[in-house]
Length: 121
Image (tube, rainbow, N blue to C red; front, side, top):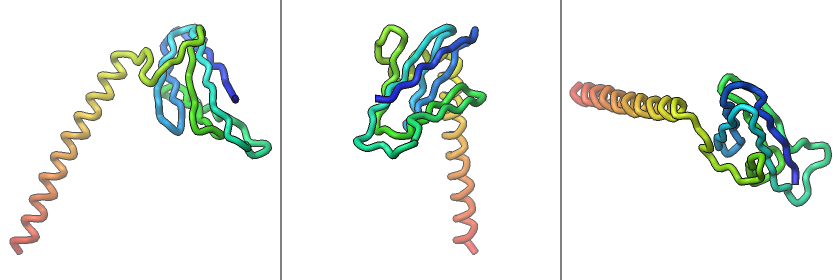
């Protein structure tokens, strides 16, 4: 099995996304996680098991050669999606979803008005 160790050597929580599944796992300062990927039967020669991408929201670990990956903390306990997700992140995501829902409702109203205008011509 392929694995990669991640260390949060900062003073702030760090978001880790495991792709292509999009799961988020949040590391406290000085915390260590290990991502373990199940190897496929016959991985192509020369392929790398992970790509790591740093971005404004945190770090994405792209699992290239497996169908499943598991995240473990420094004690070896499995870490699930949403682990230690900060409250302010949760609130921002909920607010974004509500705004998107309001936008969809407004768009539906505009579409209905446009349809009605076309039908009345």
